[in-house]
Amino acid sequence: MQDLKHYQSHKKVHARPMTRGEFIELKKRPLDGGRPDDQGYFVIYNKGTPDHYESWSPKKVFDEGYSETSK
Image (cartoon, rainbow, N blue to C red; front, side, top):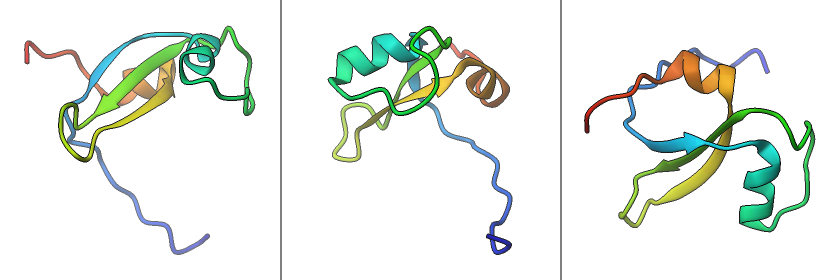
C-alpha cells in the first residue's frame, strides 16, 4: 500500500457522541472489532441528500478531525 497519499478533511458532518456498541445496536450489525464500550461518534455525511451516509468514528479520530460549528 505504498501508493497511498495524504488527504485532509474539509467536510461538514452531523454527529453525536455514541459508543461503538450503541452504533452496532442502532444499525443492527455484528461487532466487527473493538469493544462495545469504545467511545466515539455517530456520524452522518451529506445528510438529506442522495449521498447520505452514516458511520461510526472513534472519539480520538473524530476529535482530531472535526471542530463543532454553529451550522
